[in-house]
Image 1 (tube, one colour):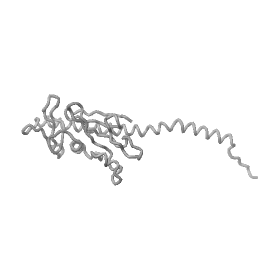
Image 2 (image 1 turned 90 degrees about the vertical axis):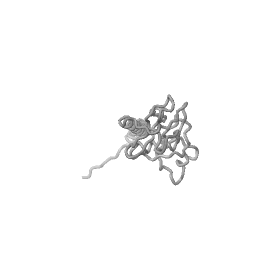
Image 3 (image 1 turned 90 degrees about the horizontal axis):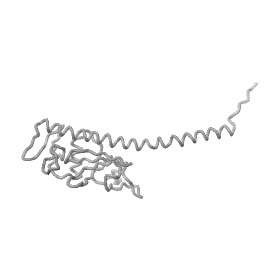
Image 4 (image 1 turned 135 degrees about the vertical axis):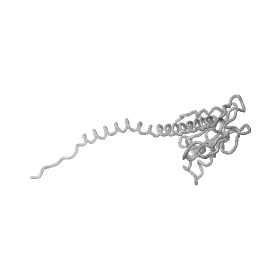
Length: 199
């Protein structure tokens, strides 16, 4: 004798679909929030490594007896010559990384020098916002470096590209200030690194 098998009734199927829908509605926002948390962790990790590099450069300069040639502070840090801040104004603390090439006021290029000089195997970075939308270089850069002036001090701002705003053509818009995108600021005059989580 064959046993007759029955499938699920329509009511049972509807109940299962409703339960799955409720689970999806409650779980989906948690999964969507993971991207924001990952982006925040990314900028915090890089900023932490950057701040550590700044501190190590300063510590090496102090340990070597504050080497100074003709009013120029510089050291060799992990095979790279770094020029450091000098006490030219009251607001400038000496001994913080400023450039790899010469002592100058920070520009976006100088910010790249510091980035490459103190981080080992740093993430890809550009100082040209147009590179972010160049078809041949799209997604090639993870960070954007720009400068900003705060009073008498020039700041290096480093933005996580994936957190920047996009326009109607799906192209990245250069950030107006540190309130856009996840970023961190480096102030060579004091060695301060400040993280800004805006997304």
